[in-house]
Image (cartoon, rainbow, N blue to C red; front, side, top):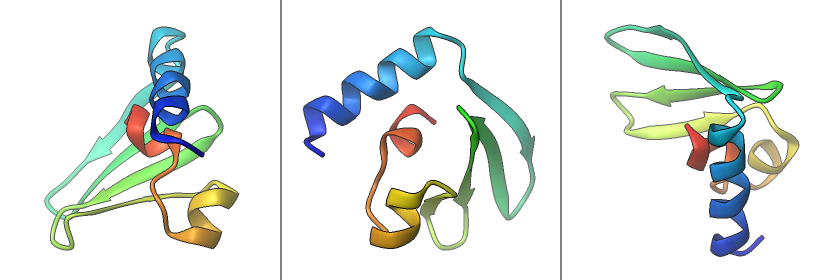
Length: 67
């Protein structure tokens, strides 16, 4: 997926109100994006998402971009 397409899809999620902060703590920040859970791991300075693309490739998906 190209970065332009990823940004457009992410912008649509934000515009449509599909991104919501669920919790924040000293270790992690949890967000719901669409039907997936996105987590920012503070110590590792790394994002993860439960979508298939991110799970299989460990690459940045548009859910992470939207978060």
